[in-house]
Length: 452
Image (tube, rainbow, N blue to C red; front, side, top):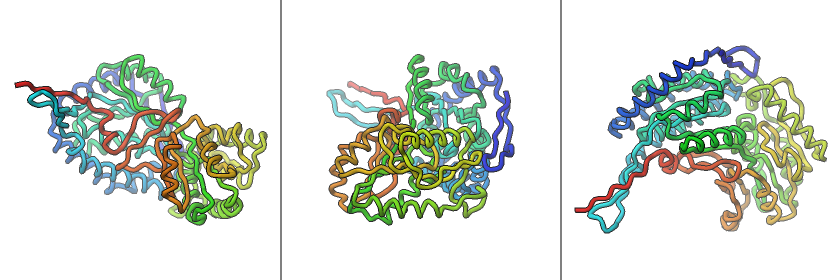
């Protein structure tokens, strides 16, 4: 089987990749298992040195890696460079903190000594998406490999060039062959991989449907799983907010990566008193974004990664308009490109309110007061993150308990940060990545009890 990577901006082929044969896949799985025995015994100090080298390689070759990201999935080159640099940051973060995170935890009991060790589990199988083809992988790999596990990557087929580069980065840094391996297979091989004795856990970032299917397979084979799935984040603006700052942040929160982000703000819930001002300024700001060649540093809006994704967004818009939503700006599609679009008069029951919209679409919702704003925000099957804009930050903090999501940001867009745990609730998945929690997801918390 052949996989083709196609540049969504111009339709040209970026690369072609041949699927591994059954025998090749068997060899990869066996190599992951045998490599774990030696890698897990490698001193932590050496593993830390290697992840430091990975971070340096990323910085030294940022333009090369950024270009591949842009060619394969269509985000503006400036955003691709930022993504690569963020990957270097997460490598630095775990290099600096792994010793503290993995140290033994002493527990006072009636034993002479009792403590908890943090030992590696084995091989962790990662199924990763195309929207942040480097970042999603490195936020898994940096803590997981540094903890002493080996990793297997099954990336999205349209970014297999990025996947191959990532494997090469680990090899260049000096990681032993077999510690991190890229697998080129169709999704029908997923169960074979999960079932293999080497694989002790599965992590997936992707759609709700993909997460449900993989979680079932992990459960069937009694393997731990972590799911980072879809989102339908709300962006609530109170009447006392700094509207100019809220608008500036809102544009980035919705249009970064052409809106192709699980944690992007998708539902903009505005209180009556600031509704007209916000909408007018937001429309002006979105209309001023520059679309064009994704390799041009001045381009702010790229294409969607594939035509079917743009088609799906267009269908969600049409169905919402049929139910009463109104197009304030945009709405047109040209192949993989979809205009930044603003819909007003959005209400529950419309696709742009109920469903995750993976593209440059902002749904504008009016609320009469703060209570109704939070009720509308919570009216979602997803639970990744919520933003609130207000000058009364103390009051906003009090409302944190009202939000069931995994993140609550005040006067800032919801974003991932190596120093903070990241993950969702409800249909957005379970488990946490990043920070100490991300490293603890894939370790064996082993009790050691000594009685003299």
